Length: 388
Image (cartoon, rainbow, N blue to C red):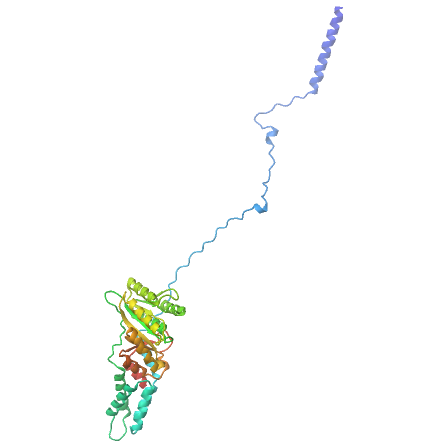
């Protein structure tokens, strides 16, 4: 029986061996892994995911920085160069030369063969028509009759002209002080107050006077106290800009006296040579307006003395201008007269009559619309122009 067990044991061992062989053949041993080289799984990159754009309504507009423009270099305004005194006097002679109706008419009468009573009456008529005035006319005629009295014969034209020239110059007043009082005292500026009725040309005159003073190298400022007309204030500002002169202005409709006061105060603070104050035009028969003008002058003098009060008269108004002059003089003590539109009138006698009425000189005459058509008045130049 032992051999039977032996055989069975051998058989079992054989079966086990065969089974192990078969199992080993069914398996494959993987190749050795090189630890220095990454495994296949290490070389696989994760898929690239494109970022999703947000919805259109959540997009913010790109911030655009505004372009900053470089500020332009300030350009200095081109200022006018006003004409000097000599140039204006030449203009005076040239403009008045065409107005010689008065002088030429008198010369024609004085050159007649016989200076009879009819001739002298005609001479009186010429003088009266030219607004010389009754008293002045009587004086001139008497002087001419005395100096040109001859016993028969004809008066020499050259002699008649020379005598007439002397009498007219004497009538106009060659010795009157026609200088503008534009300098103050104690370091304060001179103050020029310009007055007159509506439409006489006050604002334009203020602008033209500023040009005269600038031509004389004086520092000037303007006060726009005609606060009832915005156009007057703007017009004055334009005049100032053309010659580099400061203009003090207040709100439209503000108190003229307050504006005038502030303008003069500013002129004192700035140390200017002259302050020129424009006032509102007013009728001489409106007492309230005239009283207000007196107030303007009184208020100004709290700052500095008024050195000149110029009354602007339209030379074409004739005898009505004398009424205006009389009333204004009573209110503000006129010291000088400006005759505008003298080139448009052959009635040069207004110069004589207004001076005689007020006892103050004509200091300036307006000869046209140009910016320098305002000239210092000269008795000799005026008479020479009248005589042609």
